[in-house]
Length: 129
Image 1 (cartoon, helix red, strand yellow):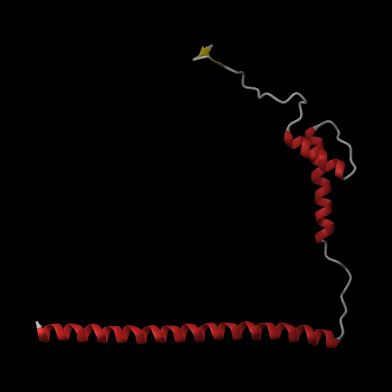
Image 2: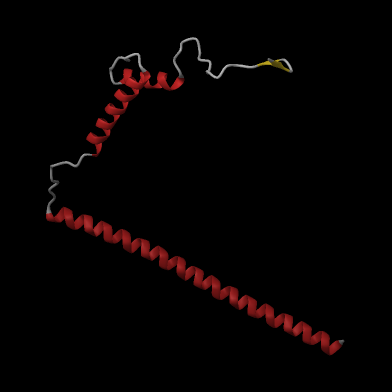
C-alpha cells in the first residue's frame, strides 16, 4: 500500500550487492593480517578472531617467570630518584601555598584599606551633609 508515494518494505534489511556487511569485512581483514583464511561464516570468523586476540592479550599480559636483578647501587639510585622527585613535588607545592598565602594577605590588606577609605568618605559626607 502506498502512502503519499511511499511504498511499504518488508521487515528484512537490504544488503549491499556483495552480501557482506562492514563488520564482517573488518573481521576478514583482521584474519588476513594474522594469515588466516575466512571460513565463509561470519560467526566462525568472529570466533576465530576473538580466540586469536585473546591469546595475544594473554601473552602480552602474562607474568614473567624471570626475575630482574639489580645491584645495590642501582637500587639506591632508583630510591634516590624517587625521593628527589617527591622533594621537588613538595617544594613546588610549598611555593604555590606560599604564593597563595601571600596573595591572600595582600588581598586582605587591600580590602581593609578599601573599607577604611569607604568609611572615611561616608564620615566626611555625614559631616558635610
